[in-house]
Every structure is written in structure tokens, then in C-alpha cells.
Amino acid sequence: MPYVITCGDDGVQVNVGTRLGVVGVGLEFDSFSIILKAMKKTFQDDLRVVASGENDWVKEKFKLDDYGQADATMQQQAEAMSDKEGLLYSGFFPFADPKQLKHDIKGHMVRPKNVHIANKISFTMGGGEQTYSLGHYVISADWLHKAPKKEIKKAIMDQVNFYQKLAGKTKLQFVFELGGELDEKIAAKNKKLLEGIGIKESE
Image 1 (cartoon, helix red, strand yellow):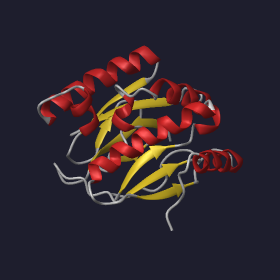
Image 2 (cartoon, rainbow, N blue to C red; image 1 turned 45 degrees about the vertical axis):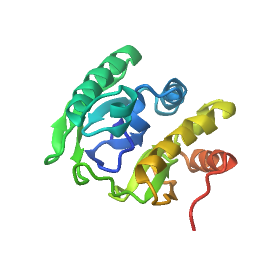
Image 3 (cartoon, rainbow, N blue to C red; image 1 turned 120 degrees about the vertical axis):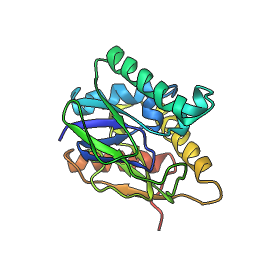
Image 4 (spheres, rainbow, N blue to C red; image 1 turned 60 degrees about the vertical axis):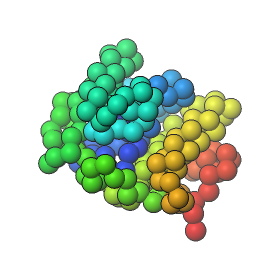
């Protein structure tokens, strides 16, 4: 399965492909260059990019009035970013039936429109999202072992804090996902690095 960088939004479901969640697909995200460099070292450039519908991060960062503008902006910016970074841009996940996109990716948006229902954040560490859950935001931590330690905390916590803001009064629980194609030792190292910045799996 090819790896695909998507937003960590709780509605994004990848039916064909393995998801690596980065808030707003990395657009206007200070730490994205660090994350992407480490992802390329981890996955040897076998990376696709997919934009997705109703993206709160893009709407906020680009100071847009509505989700229609956010959808258009995210597609334009994600494609431009993909070209700049030498990544494959697969297209856009809509609120509809699963859609076949370019470069062997298929998926869609499945949460209710205008509503976030996640109560957890899933941190993937062993090679992307293995099991989809509608109740989870997704943050890729698969790349931590290839990043400078001093950069990890900001890259992770900026995403955690954004999703917690979306969740409002619901205190998000943390779930660790260690499965995937990466070596178990790499997943264990990513877990240790995540715990080193204070992220612990919820009991």
C-alpha cells in the first residue's frame, strides 16, 4: 500500500493506501518541513498527498470565510506543495462515497458535515494508520526517529493543541498504534521519543 499524507481530521478515511496524518496536510504548519524531511528518510519518497473537505486548519490559517473556500484553497495549495516537494498529488477526498484518486489512492470523508466527533488522538508509530476509527484524530509519529529531538515537541504539540481546541470541553484521550511495515525497533523508538515529550497513552 502506498503511503499518503492527509490531514489528521477525524473524518478522513483512506480505503486504499496507508495514512500518515499531519494537521492541515502540513499547509502553513511551521514544523512541516522537519516532518516531511524525516518522512522522506523513513519512507524513501514513496509518498502521496491528498486534500480533504471541510478543513478547519486551512480555514483558520488562510483566514477564509467558509468551507467552500477552504476546499478550493486546500486543493490548490496541496497540489502546489506536492510539486515543490517532489511528492505525488492524488487529489481530494469529498463527503461522498469512496473516490478513486490518482496514484493508487482511494478514500473519502465520513464524519457528519460541520461536526467533529473524535474523543481520541491516535499516534501512529510503526508505519501509518492500520485501523480506521471515526472517533480518532490521527497524528503521524512514524518519523520521530529521523528528526532532530529538539524539534519533536513543537511539531507534535502544535497538532495536539489544535485538535484539543476543536474538541472543546471533551478532553482528548491518547491512543498508540505501533503496527505497520516499519521495524518493531523503530516503532519502539518512536514511542519512547513521544513519551519523552510527555505524551503518554491514556489508561
